[in-house]
Image 1 (cartoon, one colour):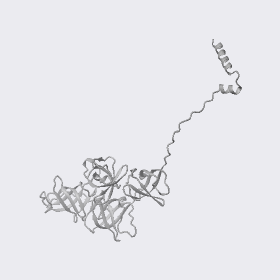
Image 2 (tube, helix red, strand yellow):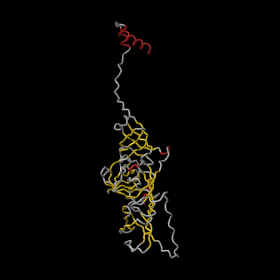
Image 3 (cartoon, rainbow, N blue to C red):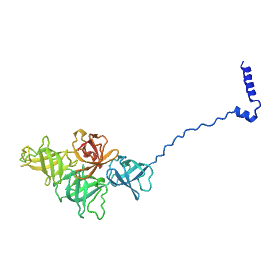
Image 4 (cartoon, rainbow, N blue to C red):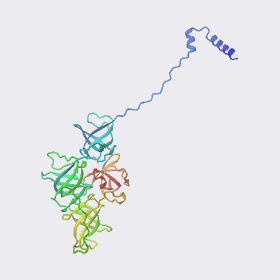
Length: 376
């Protein structure tokens, strides 16, 4: 059955083609299929990413100035993440990873994505020593006058401080710091202190932490040394304002003639131990002889035990940091990762906030880890 059927089909096809030219037959046997139009798929614009290496010249919260070879580049890093073990200290080797293409040293056409330091591939920053007479002291700044008559202000947050002979105006001091302290020849004071990191301050060189005071023998005639715990509320040069722990009783401590040691800096909310002789009446320090003041060492303390705090105005942010202008006028930068943010202003520029932080967590860095953020 299949063979006769094939013959009939062939015959029908033959009859349908009878009278057609060879060209027409070919056209009917081989049907041409026009190619279908393929929808145009837009190609995504190619994104260029690159990295610029150099040394940090300055940083003010969201504008970073980098020197690479003989050119200066100023990057807006407000949308970038900062991942630098040493913080952002002038003179440090860092890299800016960006999106786009640089034109000469103009950075307006690129977007900074990340700032990193390659600390594991380079030597550590050198520590410098500045010597001068004390002019002013606040919780976050210290100003000295050098022998050449120049005034230098240094950021002091978290720095170890030991004043063997007390704290007073005109006292010779040694400041150990990292970064580039450059001042134009015609300038009297320095600016751009935000890119420095002070490690220690002392009236002795080299810096040496005091030995623990031995407990006196009760059988001797030496007056018994007593101790009083207080919480710092403010500091201004030689005067330390505090509140007696467990009370609301304020006291003012004169630090001008007694040894003072602050392992983690002088900051509101931190605890101090006041050593004295005499009889404390529970309300004032009248009649007492102050022997020394010792601040608490916050190194390795749990977050739940930290009460060190400061207040200021938010001036700028990046993807993972914010910068405050403190009440004593210095710019301080903090990491936001891991912080409890209870503020209502969304960390917008101009908002006033109070933060809790541990300055000892950033012994070698000028960017601090924040624990809690609240409205001021």
